[in-house]
Amino acid sequence: MAYQAGGQRSVPRSVPERPEAEAYLRDYATLVEAVPFPSVVVDHRWDVVLANTAFASLFQGVGPHPTAMPDDNFLRFVLFHPDASTVLGDHEAGWCLPMLAHFAAAVELHGHDHGLQAVRREIAQDPIMEAAYRQGLPHWIRAVGERAVAQDGAVRPLLHPDPRWGATDCRVVDETPRTLREMGYTRLTLVLREVRRDRPRARAVRRGAAHLRVVPTPED
Image (cartoon, rainbow, N blue to C red):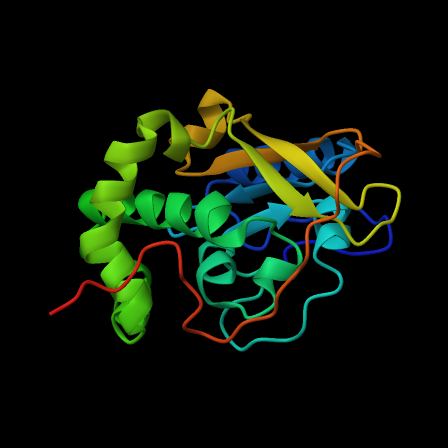
């Protein structure tokens, strides 16, 4: 796992071969662990390099999955895990479509990457997600604007398993320093907001693989 639960120090899943880069990443893991909000470092495939205990706590209730655990690959978790909507509020519009947009951008930059190509094949196996990716996504981006798919600054709903948070919002903050970016990594922190007690709780819905409904399948 990319993190160690129970308040132990986070350690990188994998580290660069250069000793100075390895030392930097291990020290950076200490910094990430000190943050009280869920924080994660991912590579261009969204493979999780390291994450803190708060990140582990957010996803502690999700069931096992062979390829889409949040501490393995966050992209796959958002798109393919049947329990994703139990944690990620407004799952389709708030998380799936923006993630598909980020995935499309990653494919443009790293088109021959085997990991990204595997995700692309899995998207193609789901007719609804494939329609969303090929036909619906461009229309959705034009409708909501480029800002809606941006990572840094986006405000998205969460369903935190800790009742002290419950149904709340988080602001996604890109905290990637230059050294980390030069390694090909990105750090994202989900800054949780105070729960508004007058706000109705969102209802989590468990769905199967073909779960996108925001973008309808085009008619023949």
